[in-house]
Length: 269
Image 1 (cartoon, helix red, strand yellow):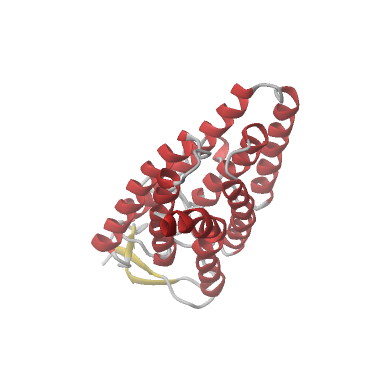
Image 2 (spheres, rainbow, N blue to C red):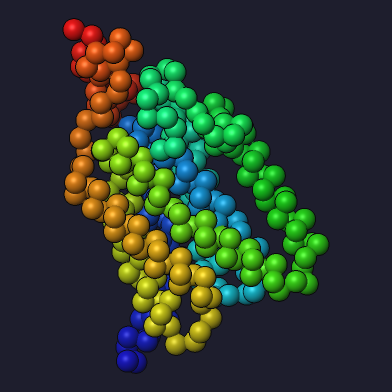
């Protein structure tokens, strides 16, 4: 148990801290290289940024495991980069980056059903403004409720509840399109490996400084990541059929590595 305990206490924290880089660097590079974020759900950076910012303020009040706190800081940096690249290379014909829009939406006339078009804005500024307002609100809350331990624990449970939903937007988007194109398998692989490390670290660590909320979140997220892997097995990177404005067979989107999106197929015959 001595060698195993040493690995848990020394190697696992290093993996946790570097996991945001290993998980998302390839996705960032892929979007930059192909110059399109088609198929990638913008809800992923939304979920991780909200959860990580909340975990920072959670740590201020509770002072949980330091490696998890540093991981949250690194995650914020990586998700900001990912959001910037995804917005920069957002496909001009695809305003929708989320699985929650109407499935009957047509190219160039997509119905968006979120209040105030939340996280579906056409320009980049509202995304950064929202994150700034969200952080500012937490700063005010920290000042007002700094002496309340219950407030800190509430932030922690909200943060972990949000993070637990991380795979869900991509799962729903893959299911709706019956295709996993645009979501890097390297991200999924890192998620699955990370789940294994987290389960060992959370449940086998000698000192009990990992809150229960982290363990609950980790188990739920591992189940969702496993289903994402099943989707890759079922759907792969097949073509995505888009509805035709003329009501015909439609067109297929074929992601390429060039600057523009490649469309093929027939309209009404």
